[in-house]
Length: 118
Image (tube, rainbow, N blue to C red):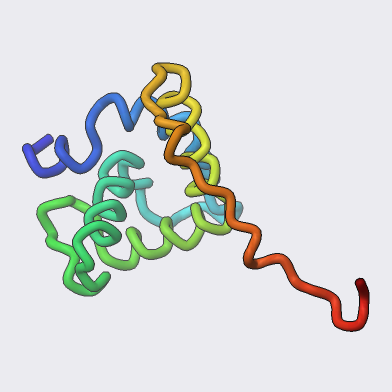
């Protein structure tokens, strides 16, 4: 793993994310290609999301094709990976006492007001 990949997805983050990634299911009719390493795909997705790079310009150095990265991003989004990952990271930070709750804000401005009701 090169330095960029290690900076994007350090081992500690991967240890939290890996169990949350949906398992690979082979096509019932068989065939297809060998599944690509989940960590490589996750790292490529993190690169696109954090750099603002267009999917079609994903560098080949990640070892993941553009269609594979985008398809997994779509599949993982539908499976709720990002929400579960966010919660896992917050839980880990909270366990370590690294969340400063003195700066937490609760916003009630988005609550709909009913017309004509007191």
